[in-house]
Amino acid sequence: MYLRLAKRLLVETDKRLLWKLFWMLGVKGYLAIRKHKQRLKRGEFFPPYLYISIINSCNLRCQGCWVDVSAKSQKIDVAAMNRMINEAKAMGNSFFGLLGGEPLMHGELIEILETHRDVYFQIFTNGHFITADLARQLRRLGNVTPLISVEGSELVSDVRRGGKRVWTRTMEGLQHCLDQKLLTGVCTSVCKSNIDDLLTDQWVDRLIEMGVLYTWFHIYRPVGPDACSELTLTPEQQRRVRQFVVDLRVRKPIIVIDAYHDADGKALCPSVIGFSHHINPWGDIEPCPIIQFAKDSIHDARPLREVFNQSAFLKDYRETIATHTRGCVVLERPDLIKQLVLKHAAKDATARGTAMQEVEAMIPRASQYRPGDEIPERSLVYRIAKRIALHEYGMYTRHFRKEQWRDPLADEHG
Picture 1 (cartoon, rainbow, N blue to C red):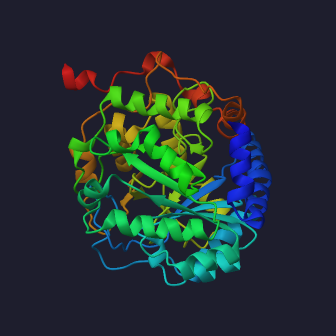
Picture 2: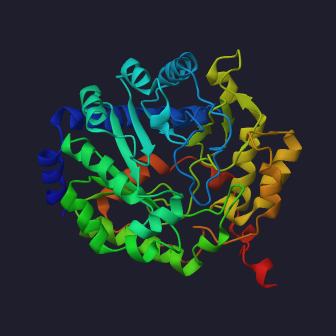
Picture 3: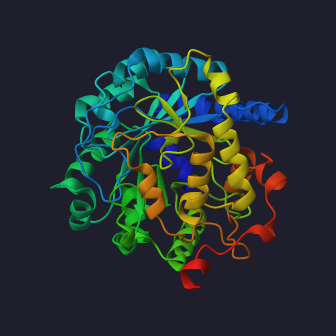
């Protein structure tokens, strides 16, 4: 399987892009993680990977979306982006995730990518704005991997994403990327309406046949003003996703992303271990994209390293959540989010101004943390990669005691 994957990487992608990915994500990414771990040992903090929502606008209206896509358009301007990326590069960072809204609606995106060709960007997109010309520009730049969201079959996609011909337009954008031999991925927020269509060998085989190099199956989280909680997976379905991902990695020549389990299958949260935090379109620094409260901003006059290092809210968030669960706090313990927000007087970082009401309306649910029911990685390659990227942060070992965990469904069922 590994030989088939290596052959695909060499034959189906632009070699220049492959080399850039190896150098910027592989070599420089490894060094960024080492620097992050060394900072933590010194009692300092700066995340090695930033999610940046560069604009709130979007052409779709997805179920369960937490972004203020209907509000007045807000984007991070070029000057602020350049300052943030330069300061992050100075800390060793070499890889950035660009989100929205729809990030390709940011009018200066190509200018930003062009300015920072010494780092790599992963663009989370619905694919609708990827024309043949844009795909050619991305290939010329060489420092971008598009991650295109496919949320179901043709019929399901229109319902899930609130538009017409959504699936067709997404697949057209995907094909433009593949025609240019871009390192292209496909992601899916797995929920009840798409799990049977997309969590299958047939779908993965189709992606491989098309030329898609990596995929990411992450579970749906019921958040936002219209949470659509009926789409939430059951604990059994969540386990099914995890088992599928682990098995897929040893059976199919495609890279499978997963940031919520370590090599031994133990649950983790990237924001709690300090691996990543999120910047919203207004420049507010949030723990993660779906926790929309903030005390700090990239527009602070202080250097960004000081903003992250001195943030009492983010530090307390990481330590408090690590004490209570290894899973997703949004699913398991929304009450902890409320406590932290009130304790630090963190502001609602949304345009709609209803984030606290949304948190208060959440009910505890199962997340990826199910002690005693872990599914370890079967692939040696993924075990090694995860031990490098996701182990030895110390948050859970310092703060977490297993007996403190409680089944989030216990309150629900009495």
